[in-house]
Image 1: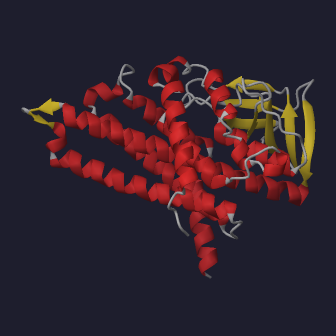
Image 2: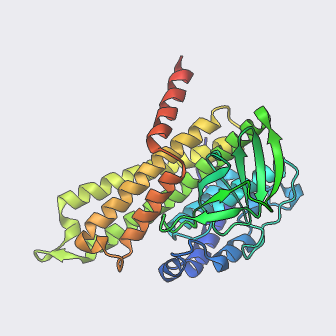
Length: 336
């Protein structure tokens, strides 16, 4: 397993970093904070082919894969982009596998997102991007369904992710059954693995940028006549975070590689990557906030943005403790 990026992959990273630096500045993030969705940014990344990387070349995509998507997702995390790229990508793959035409409009029209948790009582649980989406792909009982035109109930201030719960059984909802019974569950698990791997990459980007902001502040903020970065307590904290970020990146890319190569344990690797990256992103954001001291807790400073987004993405996957229990159970079962 070689994680060295090819020249083409490095070009992808550079292109999206440039675009996101321009189109997802902190000012743009703050402007999109309430809605959790920036339609202009969505138009840019779709037009650049961000969704096309998960589609086969014969279906209008680039024929790349999960690794390339993870590189774009990392960049999106670094810039706190207010668009549901991973949710839309997971939905795109499932729709393509089911033979449903994929047409996600570049301005948000036609946006379809994937729900990483099953519906409960006819309601798709809190899903990132659902507040701006036209439709949602969700496991509803024994069926994997695409629901178009469902009523979305936005959740305020959940990491400015455009999160909403979606009522699937309201009048006027157009339901398309993509798969039933065991096939539905298997397809949904594949979507969950893609969501876990992609979201892990977003979280790696958040952690990396939070660490960069913390280090930058520690070099300019002075106490007792010296930069606070010269204090061992801060040095050790940031060094530990840097090590964890590198580990989270390796595991995230291992998960993407496993998906592209259809490895038997790809679902477990993706779950582990997401669980670990979730914890690392929260710790990195907390370290960033603490380095800023009292300023870090104020809305005027950017440190709190990283913590809010990291905590939200950790919650979108369900109870973090249950995720770690699932990872442990799978590891023990594999060892037997």
